[in-house]
Amino acid sequence: MDAPAGNFYNGWALRFVHRSPLPDMTLTKTKVPTGLEVLCTQHGLRMTGQRRVITRVLAEAHDHPDADEVYRRANAIDGRISLSTVYRTVKLLETKGILEKHEFGHGRARYEASQRGHHDHLIDVATGRVIEFKNEAIEKLQEQIARQHGYKLIGHRLELYGVAIKPPKKTP
Image (cartoon, rainbow, N blue to C red):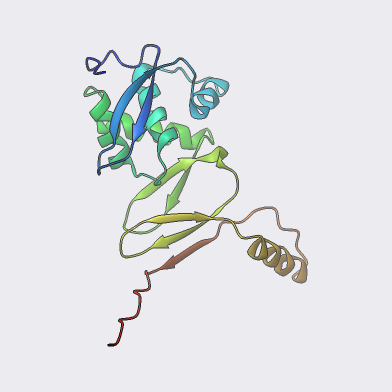
């Protein structure tokens, strides 16, 4: 079902189907707000139509998009959304603690929702791909190191950088 540009956010929720560099964005009839929209409302932010689209793009993202990628996805939904609107919105959401900003290299900040729970990142330096992971052994080791130095760990951020290991060539 195609909706005319600009009329899609009044009572419609977006469902993203990732098949290409720009996700196919289809509409489903629902008024259920995303977690990011709820957080925005709880922080007293006014949810304009454009802000709602941007927060939905961010809520559905599984790839830590940068502002340019958020703009491409949001602008594909509503052509009236400008890059400056995206930059202002992600900065506001970051300031309110709704989004986390990450500097994974390649000279651009990337974003993810703050409420996603603790996890660490493995960044492929060749492609920029970000892999989220949890490892209890690493968590325990970090707490042990803090205790050995006389500290109680209250938080941390672990980012591992690497390149994919190519499988060895088969010999005949």
